[in-house]
Amino acid sequence: MRIDIVSIFPEFFSVLDISLLGKARQQGLLDVAVHDLRDFTHDRHRTVDDTPYGGGAGMVMKPEPWGEALDHVLGDEADPEATTVIVPSPAGTPFTQALARELAAVPHLVFTCGRYEGIDQRVVEHASSRVTVREISLGDYVLNGGEVAVTAMIEAVGRLVPGVVGNPESLTEESHEGGLLEYPSYTKPASWRGLDVPPVLMGGNHGAIASWRHEQQLERTRRVRPDLLG
Ligand code: JQB
Image 1: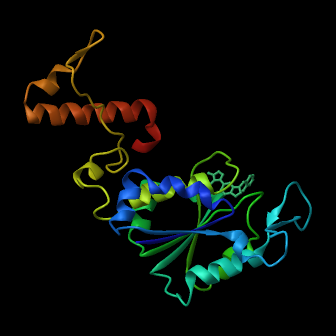
Image 2: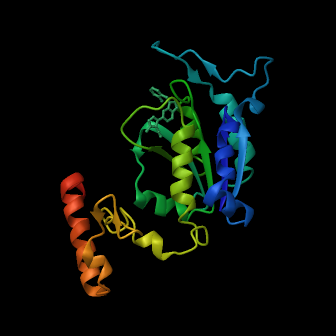
């Protein structure tokens, strides 16, 4: 999978050099390139923002640098099946595990990291005439820009790319894949600070363990996320 990121803070994404995604990049499973939006400006101050038409607080990102940056990363690509531009926004559709699965099947993802009050809406409109564009929100809270959201999205999508997570079974057993939260996990020692591991997990009865875990998933989901049960 090819991933391009455009941001005025390219150094933010050094985090992608480490851990699981860093290894996946070294193995060639993920090809990540980070681009500085200011490299696509032409004035001496490398200006990326301006005042909003219609008034209001804050600044808006100018369309011209974004247009040039997207022209650069998209090249002559025009297949809406093969390329998706992701525009993180508090006004986007919610990011979910199902959406992460969809995006993991797209060969080329382009992430646009806005700042200030966001990007001139015509950038979305124009890119939509060439490739698939999705405005996506990480969740219902306000961040200062797209970088943190993009990092979370790349981690969630990247680990679903075949080969990135060593044991693919660990992908299906976790929270949200089966529509339920995951069951609680325990490791050694069997007793710690007066707290014992649930005995069923130490009995070796695999049927009993599976039903206990499923019951825990249901109880936990009912208690903390009843909305998931519908
Ligand atoms: C600028 C962003 C998020 C991108 C996601 C999420 O856009 C704004 N509107 C009002 C106030 C502040 C901003 C700041 N901002 C670009 C940008 C916020 C994403 C964002 C997001 N994805 N919350 N905030 N879940």
